[in-house]
Length: 167
Image (cartoon, rainbow, N blue to C red; front, side):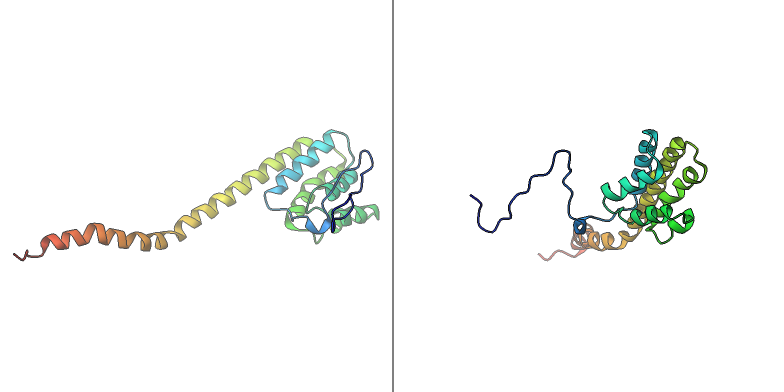
């Protein structure tokens, strides 16, 4: 017997995967370009053609749904650069890395993996730069927080010891 207010559970056919609703998918972040390039390299190494790789990324990776438009554009024989126009920056970087594979048909698993390593290093440099900027921005607030303690523990006792004692 079903509890009141709950929706009936549907059984999935064998082999079907449960996916979150499309509205709940998160957008991909900066660091994910390296992951997407690694995924592309792994799928290329497994023998998948590039359009199929893009379809799989669009269906399986949250935030990659705009790749469906790229696949449709390429199916309509649109030039590579025009098919990737208007994509989010992360996906655009993936498209730039995949351009060599698409335009030449050459095996480029090593190139994609080195592009992923470059993306990781660039992300690390951006994070280090932001951390250094944060350290500079925190000097004044931390100084203002430490100043009262310094006054109370360092200056006030010295001033009190210099005052003449009333006897």
